[in-house]
Length: 320
Image (tube, rainbow, N blue to C red; front, side):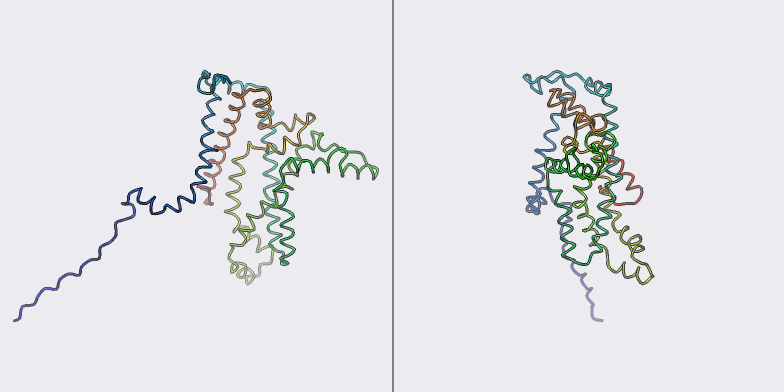
């Protein structure tokens, strides 16, 4: 019998080394242009968000202007004890929380409702015109917008002029403690709801149209389609924006409050940020102002972490 040679096994193709085995420097060089694109953002946050944190040590020091931040003596938690023991502090917390809560309660649904209404408009020229008019106030500073509000709601404003001309009495909207918070919430909504609706309109455009067709086949009318298709499609975006809103719970809008505030409404309109402005800049109590700001940042961080944890437990999309 002829000798049969054993067939040689096929040669295996060499597989490249796993990406994880590449050095860090090689990976950075490979994606260098991507890193170059994000480099300006990283530099911005390092310069304006992280380096200023060095100044937080002022909250634990008896700050001396001429000695400097590094040479000032340490005093521990003295400024925090002063803050928590102040008679003004509970009022500041109450006003800040109430104004922020009213903003979320009444202001959060408005962009959603407006986006749902605008999404049903079929005339593009009308839709674009309304959208332009509603988000234009976002680009106005509160200095300008507060001047408009005062000209409308002030003692000699348009509303009071109409009331007097029709035989009514003047209403002090901006100097009445009973109406000042309502003015803050309503003017804040008027300024920002058009801009906030842009995010929801973008989310609406990503919903699969076949879902609406299936709902129509099942006999769902417009309201049923919104309830069972549109709102579930917006739920992840709503959850993320709600978490971000809760993170700023102690940030009641310094620009707006500062421009509309006056001595008659300090009892209901004085918030943490306006107190920090007075204590830090007008009274030169830099240590106390830094301590209050640090307290506000810690509470905001705790709120956003807690809200994000709750969303993850509920199975919703979270920030991280």
